[in-house]
Image 1 (tube, rainbow, N blue to C red):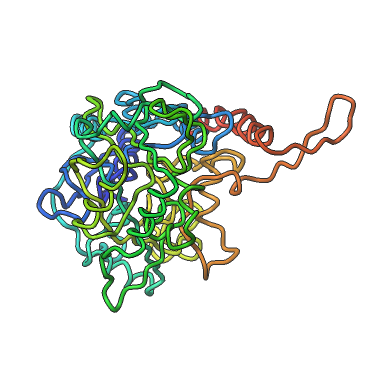
Image 2: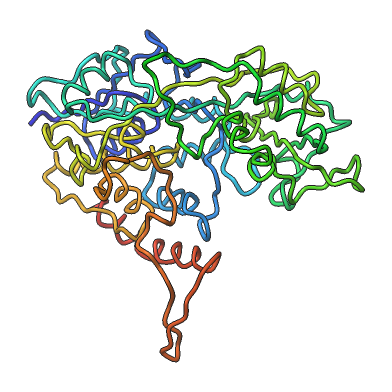
Length: 451
């Protein structure tokens, strides 16, 4: 077996996989088509570019599944988490990063590693036969020619869904005579979020414009299958006029200092998007509206009447395979074990989840090449729960991308008290129990994989 691993794609998964292999002494060649060929969503030539939001979501490892995954990855020496921690920006209880600073740091670390080299080219087809060891981490925006080759190999067992990007606004264009700084329930630093309030009349007018706006049309051969965790704002509005006030525009935990006597009916929150805090991301405002419509409608929001947009929202296709059918427990293609898949193309959803699967594949391949035992993460950990989703063959016909969540973990119903009685636990206490159990097991697994 060749002692070089080829990785297709330098996104979050490919970057993490490359790092884990290189740190274990394996030579890696990363094949990245940018800058020669751009994807519909990428704006830079950096590795691990965050194309959607700059938030890695909650960083609470005591009650949050994603926060737990953060902590597990830190303990396992993840490149992505290390770079995220070094480039974080204020975001209340969330971990948000300076978008360009983060991707630049990941790129620097990879480019300076003695075991990693880059070839800037488009890989248009999977290798023939058993030609070398490969990891496909081309992501949900894989090039058309590579997707065609993958489909041929997997007998067309692939699914598509559509993901949307939220706009980014220049902070200096926000009207602070109407907007104000505050984190919901005053969590974190008060400057983490900028809030724009709407009255009931303003909210209803806004939703009406969303519903009647011109949207990006799909081709006749395309069918929109959105991921529920990243619905376009206008698609959410179509589900009911009050949907947004119970979603991204909920006003709870906020008080308008410009008019404390009147509670906002709805609120648009803007999250810091870069370290210098010159850019603000519209939280939950992924969209497929046409550019002109975005500018017109989003400027109806009080405080954003003169908003200048650094980036408008966009629509792009995500591609993923039926991993439970096609991959083994180590994420190798069953028909071609010299090829592994990593990241969102496997059906995990989210930045950190993608990086976590990249971590696992990097570790698995390195262990295989070094003739070491591949140790699966305990199912009770976030690593193990995410991996279990990719191998769950309960209903492969309706297999869909998934963020890490406690529903993927082995269930905890209750606990035995000191006097021997069983007590049911639920709510936040139950989440804490999941996190305690996971963290009690992760260190032992990390110890094993580092031997």
